[in-house]
Amino acid sequence: VSENGATTVNAAVQSSAEPLSAAPATSPNGIEHTLANGRVAVHDPAIVEENGVYYLFGTHRRCARSTDMVHWERFDNNLSRDPYALLGDIWQAWPKQDSNPDLLGNTWAPDVIWNKTMGKWCMYLSVNGDQFRSVIVLLTADHVDGDWTYVGPVVYSGFDESNLWNTDVPKVLELEPKTDGTVGYDLTRYLSLKDTRINAIDAAPALCEHGEMWMSFGSWFGGIWMFKLDPETGLRDYSVRYPLVKDSSDPYYGVKVAGGYWNSGEGSYFIRENGWWYLFMSYGWLGRTGGYQIRLFRSKSLLGPYVDQNGNPAISYGEIPDNQERGTGIRLTSSVQWDGGPAELADVEVSQGHNSAIRRSKDGRMFLVYHTRFAERFSEGDDEDYESHVRELLPTSDGWLVAAPYEYRGSVAVAPTGIADITGDYNVVLHDQHTFFNGKQEDDGTYVGINRPTRYTFHEDGRITRGEIVSFFDTPDANLPRSTDGPITCGSWKPLSGAVNGFNCCASDAEIRLDDVTYIARFATLPREIDGKPVMTFSAIGNNVCIWGSQS
View 1: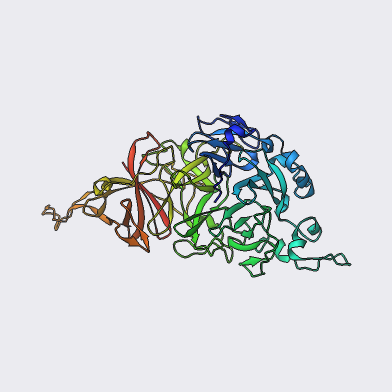
View 2 (view 1 turned 60 degrees about the vertical axis):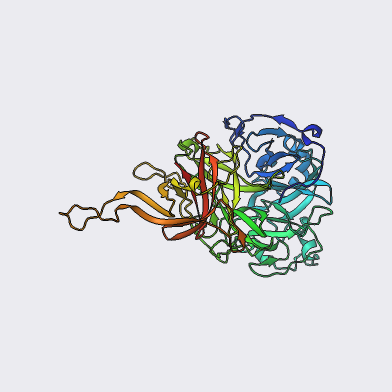
């Protein structure tokens, strides 16, 4: 997904893009936030690679590039310099309204993919309007950093009988105007937030294993949908027809893959590994205290059905109030404060989401890219101090993906060489699906939703213990310890050999049984965030829950 297999001239040499190194992040109200050296603030980041250079594209035409996915610099192109020149006509024709008069704050969440047939980079960009009157448009370029050329609209939302003829909906639905001025078609479902009323945002183009191009899009409310693209034009493939099947497919929006019924869920993204398609979605709301979080599902087909580890479907079949606090979907990351870092509340990630993912061309390793806000980086009326972060994605032996416990800072996960590397004391955190950082504090001053570690010891004999030595006595007077004295055994672990569910295991795979839950883990040495010290870590998944461990 969103990778380039083409051979092109070095974009850094040939492009007209202008560097804007170390540019500060700016909130919608104009407040600037200072970024550390090499950091970048790209909201809703979509990552692509061209000739060993990595590019991020995000909301409000912000873009950045890097040669190592660690040190980023901003750059400019014709889209960021003069969006009205590219998008002014479509803005006037559809999204612009008195309640939403400015294009500059309404260019949202682009994604970019190489179209081999066209020999072009294709950017799918949301031009947002009030009351969901939005449109996803296509821009193309010879090099991924621009300049860009406007091609046309790809999909609309927010239409009704009064404006239907200003869209491509009649073409798709094969409608003809009636002499009495009516549409002659039931548009009720497109006006219902619990049915098919979506916002045409968050495009995610994907190249399936058979070479077909598809694009997902959508948001809260009506869910995430997907239809086929025409590789010759990069636009919708108008030759494909979709039946009307409730919670499954729609003649205009295509195949339903997730969400719906006014439940939170947006920012879909797809990557393929080991015969599975993985769907990432963001539940909650993107504000600092909104509980934004990445949930994971998988399917054997790009079009679904997608389910989580416990078989819960990604598609909603009814209202699920506060679904960001419920158990559907695997939560990949959460707010964590532990010994390895971050040490300060100002650096604790909160509201992590709207991710993309990439498979690096030079070694095939996968990486997760997302934006995050922070627990104590805000001021009155402004909590837009955010950054783009990267973590390595690690496949488990039973066919899931987990995120590395520490942010990627240039060192990939290194597998252990033997049991001796794994044994020792660990701090373990659980990515609780039922809580999130909401800015509220407990009586002791700790924040709700910031997960803190529990200390466990992994023994060479396969035991996992917790806590100090506990002495047991037959009678209070005897005061003689029994032979069972020792720390409390609360689980076990064992290296995996052979295969699990058809997947071959390696030295880094282990089964962890902890508090009556079985997890499949990936052990790896990673540098800690707090000081760069290499330590043994693990990322594990079991019973639909992810946990992280780090040797202390």
